[in-house]
Image 1: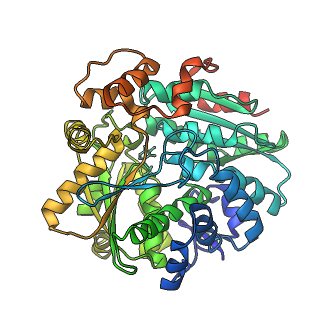
Image 2: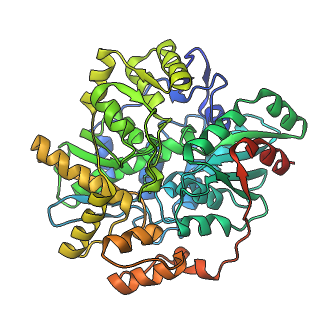
Image 3: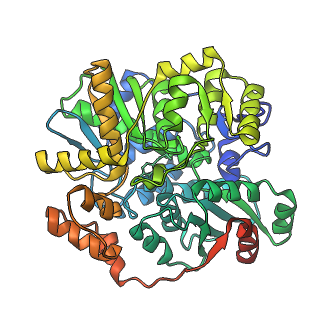
Length: 493
Ligand SMILES: *Cc1c(COP(=O)(O)O)cnc(C)c1O
């Protein structure tokens, strides 16, 4: 199976090459040329498997150049004792029958671990398969969770380095401390004086700098990405849609073959796009519900067909979704239109004017597959409080955005289809907001807040977060957004 660039489909490469490169040379994203199809017997078999076996069964469909033995070994390492729940991705059913798919039981307590515990294995194997002799430096722009998850995944992985840029004022105390205390000899963490889009734009500009790439090659290095623009990031995320479906069936909440809805708290459009791939493969999904916070650029796009990032940027209580440019949307536009020139044009317009409008056919195709809604911080907090007070279930701010949008969806459509809400972070990662939602005063530092949230709710903090108070801060540097390239230049030697 080959992978094509969304901006020039004549560029076609193997899975290993797509994963090793991250971004296509023309700036496009790699997508599989054909989407593998599965049938009900595949789903029935998946239902008898554990998470690791499900992961191998789904991912091998996309990775012809990997052996099953390789994948089994990698999956065992990626989803093992580093998870604090033996189910890896448990589904908790709430009183109204909604299933909460808890994607945050990995080492950094956010769903990014689902992909980033797997990516280093996929990437290092891909480099070998491509005969790549240079070493790789992973560059990451993060709105908080990706950075830590990537650091944890790549720390001390041979022949790699990793450098993470995060917006100085755009991440929580706990997130900042998680990153700044990262151990490993091959890691570097740098704050940027700007927002997430500044950091992401800076990283994209560095990736596009040919002269800099040549300079690194002379030193025996090249750059790659662990952002969700890398196919190796997206692929492991397809797995949990299948896994959640099987868990609904196994719990007697769904008959095999009946449709399910997924509500996805969305930022860069990677998570929900993985759900769209699962649906294209044959998973019985009715509606994918795209939930945004006050940065509702996707809500407007899905409803009206105009993507316009020329709007105020809000710093919200769900910072991992504070995003105005959702990179993975490009993949969807390409897959729905099949037209690389069209997509290249939209992306050019986005770059030059900050906006583009898709044609009516494409707009309808998008709104057939997705329903979109958004919610502000006040409703996010109200959802956290209501779920906790009514049934003792504690959710984080991102999950609460999804919950609120699901309520809107049900009100507006009357749809009673069984529904899964993807829960993307431990509430302890955002304890300042969660405490405020529960009516507590908070001005203490993050590590104290962890204890305060446990005292308030009786829920223990995940072990990796509880351990933060004993960790030393290693990284304190902050650069202007124009100074990102020199920072990489200094690190990759
Ligand atoms: C990254 C992230 C999201 C958004 O996922 P995308 O793939 O960027 O849409 C939502 N919630 C949390 C907690 C995240 O870390």
